[in-house]
Image (cartoon, rainbow, N blue to C red):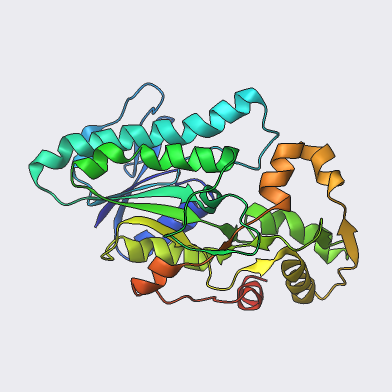
Length: 298
């Protein structure tokens, strides 16, 4: 297959394109700078610039673009960046694929989304049938997914990749936490009762590749089948690095550091998300429990 990827330099994109090429696929990365090799193509989602011929030859497009949700405080300007870095990239790819639909070629768009769409659900188990929640993150995800409408209406098979916390030593939450936990300074956050729906980097990549050809469209949760509470996560990571986890970070601390809304929606609340449609489509997880994932990663 010829697969076009945006956001290919990120944590997931880097691992994904390596695996795709290893599997024998042709991969073209969309970049915002001048191409450095034949495997790159320049685009500018803010000006609406893209090489339509690159998409014409593609069998599938995987859109992983989006500014980091947890990279900085949510100022008004950064809120705009978070939204537009998702909706503008998605809109350009979606509308471009829609214009190509008349050629009769069956194409697939796998478009990033996030489990933040479900909002804070307490202990409730949620899957793809569940209603969306409320809050800034949920609203972003709704606009993000809505931006694929032109492609869907044109007959493109669209899958919304509602991803949870991706576990990898090379980036994301785990990379930030490891130094603290290795020093024996790890501990639960707030009450520790908030649910964390995670997925190993191996299963994130494996699930995306599976969905390239699976007979499924619409929302698909990319989370492991066994979510954990923050307290359980803390204990598991402590076991993995063989260090105690006696500390507890009071809820007010992250609110002071990163802002109240940021802390509430990203750190102190969570979702207990199940990958119902992914498993129904035939995907078999490499790491179904957190202990398995951490053992493999560490």
